[in-house]
Length: 201
Image 1 (tube, rainbow, N blue to C red):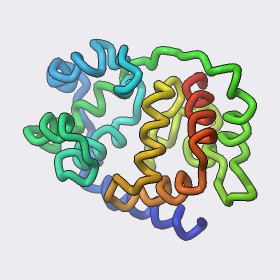
Image 2 (spheres, rainbow, N blue to C red; image 1 turned 90 degrees about the horizontal axis):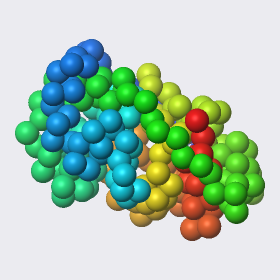
Image 3 (cartoon, rainbow, N blue to C red; image 1 turned 135 degrees about the vertical axis):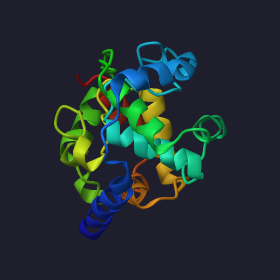
Image 4 (cartoon, one colour; image 1 turned 90 degrees about the vertical axis):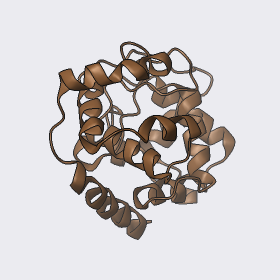
């Protein structure tokens, strides 16, 4: 697991090297008009199957758009949207969404204990590390390392992404750490931690 984490850190740095320039918030706001139908006018999507982008790290958003464009991250709708974007467009969109505020959610009390235990302490018997080690105790992520913000994200979306990682459906270096973690988690554990992260703020 230690080697896997090191690989992911190196991969995220290398992938992000071409996306280090500052984006322009106002330019990103104009370019985000096409994104509002799914992700909300304020970056907070109403459909729990679509991610909230408000408050997400700028570098993370730019890198994910790059992966959608290349097909390394598979989503037909997002690939179509990303194909026309330049690197500057991706940076501008990242800067704009990073400037917004994530709307709060409430954690599910029925799964709170299990979700909190996994997020804060991992699952030692399965060698699953604590989520907060990379995503911070309050779920804001690590913007410089392009580790995403998880606090306030829709539980349905987070659950779907963890299952996508588990199925090895993302084909890029920084995804390997999450594939390695999620493959040792049950559906119940994935759901519980997703609901817990949704309530973080």
